[in-house]
Image (cartoon, rainbow, N blue to C red; front, top):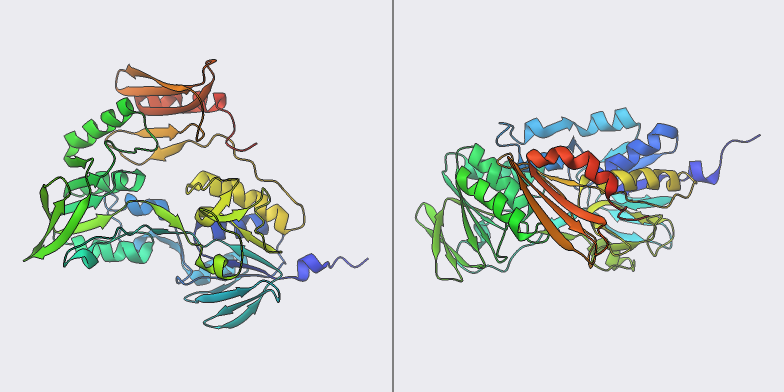
Length: 389
């Protein structure tokens, strides 16, 4: 009997060499060693842990040290073709072909693991173009070079990445100012009491906060930058880092006529509106959810690998607490679903804070655990409803 199927003969092509792209390939290779897989990426194709970018300074690791495996190592380890430093200009979903800087590439199934870009604020001033973002390893290398021998860093954004970089820079011996339009840190994730506790710990460590205001201008003044805020204050810094949030990369999908919303819209099998085209990771929107975290990617990669190999598998999300990498005050958050009815109840314990978001009938729908309370993570996670059933 002929074991060859059209499925196994069709090459799977993946665009993007981040955690999402490589994790899908690893999941496929657990059960299928023969289906041809090509990974196309505008980066060199090496593998590194992106979450480490906001903690690498304290670990005394430069950009090169964060690479765990070079592109040729990934290619041989996973038995795939890696086309690094290759730009994809368009997707023809009818002929199932990519146009790239290295010529056309046909696909049987295509996975968009395009990631997300840092949001750039429309800043004024003669040094607005000197504001840095860190979204990949090469950005991180430029950032490390920029802060070499410097003392003061200003961060735009008091969200997850902004707080993590602030803590990391403090541990690296830098002075840090953080500016945010919100009245508190982690405005979308933490209730006020928990936010204040984290702010206070980071303040004790040396962070200067500037809340409820925005940056108006960034100007070069000799060997430093002057940042003027909307509230009239001015800050001096050697380097300005913007960490105000991420926006999914949609241009390639939009140009191909693939449906997009906040992200590239996919169903529970991670299929886009185009046949044989899938999306995963920071660029994908699953039933209105865009979750740019590690755990959702791991869940999605397992489901998608099965679907790509012919066993259609619907994605489910269990409760997936997020660890905020702020050693000044360890924080784990599992936010309630958007629009969930209920209220936060906060208990201060010795060395920590426990905040529970409970429904009117007392069911746990979300939590924040800080300091000593992080020991409750396992027990409380079991009480939470799944994010996507």
